[in-house]
Length: 612
Image (cartoon, rainbow, N blue to C red; front, side, top):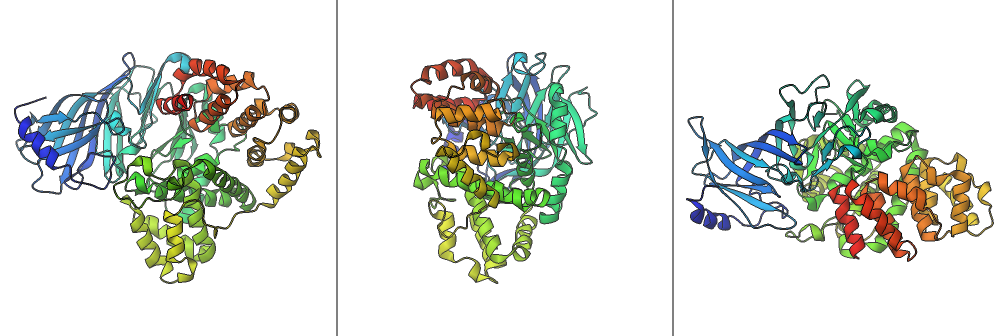
């Protein structure tokens, strides 16, 4: 760090702390924006760090600005250089702010002029929030280690110094050195034929926000599953992954028929180790996927449909800040249902949608009313006052479905495609969507939704009473069996479970949780082998209902918790175990062994459950 100008620098930095749109970023993107990023990195598995430099190309908006502010978290900054008018790299003064637990540290670079390019030399910390470094024994072969990233929402700053806000979009390229025998892949062009000689090279020509920066390094094989899609996975999992992803090209075509051309050239996927903390991450050109979606019968491929749908909602049109998260996930959840319907029929789509809506309604009991709105009215709010992350998905989709039902698809479908076309490769706010909605739909069809009802959807708690609930005839018939079974009027052997699809089992298990007794859960297990289910969505719900009923499932549940790191599954299971006095100590023992197998995101969530 060069200190000769720091006194004046600190004063100017403090003056630049005026309010800006994204409270989770230090970046002053009203003054300067990153237009391109180049990363030159080396992966050190012994020390669990990435090291090298980031080169940022800049567009200066405020001609008087002389400070570049970047977001960082646990980055060790070695030096900063700027490209001068003579084409030489020269040293620049910089300072790091005091650590903020949530946001990390602002990196403030003092500049005597407005350079077109800045280089930051750095290394990550072994505890970087975005990165999980796995030992060989945590992989399928046990031969080589593995590393992967999860940058959403604000963890890109833990492995690259960037303007870490979805408001700023940039193209990027990279060169990454990795140990022999390991493949590097990124959310960019991936050359299947590359050997990594001279470093693994990547290029993303479409502008993306920082949270879509992604990297994975490990023992990986690749298999094409379509003319513009492939799947990467550990060699021992590649066959199962390729089988599960066989309908990918059909999904792309179905989405294109509704919402216009796929604009990212290829749609590749990588199935990560079980510690991946979420179902999927829509990193452009390389969706990251949990292995828990591999059921052997393609019954959970709606997850792929969801991540693919992000190629329009989220990746193509991005929420300008996390306050507007519903523009990403609510839209994507709606589009997913439409793709599922086009591929698998209205009956399956309705079952999927009813389960989604029922889970949304059930979740309201545990979500504070202030976090049930799609959008907070407070312009300076931080992430702690944003909408509940889980509720954003179904509630946002429900609003769009309500508009579709009232306007009709012949009106609504062109309207939604127009939103994607007109805002392609841009970041948007809720106000911009509302303006587009009024101009392009409500102006001609004011009867579709009043301002008061729209406000209720956006700013009110819960689901408006005017919302129409899906009612699947197949689930209605299932409900009759479930009710009779719970009352003891229908023997377990007479349930029609062998003919139920996965979604029907999920609905059934959701509804008996907290109602069935231990004997009933034991009979279900004996009749349908639910504790050994290869479908993790079914297994999770069975284990949860069993723990609540007092049915002993320790042996299969231990295996599940030791091999699955998806936060959606493990956090509720540990929480349920901790509420059962007979299982509390056992749960602590399992977590002591399993914790190191989980991603930091999952560790934090489970740690909080134990503290409570």
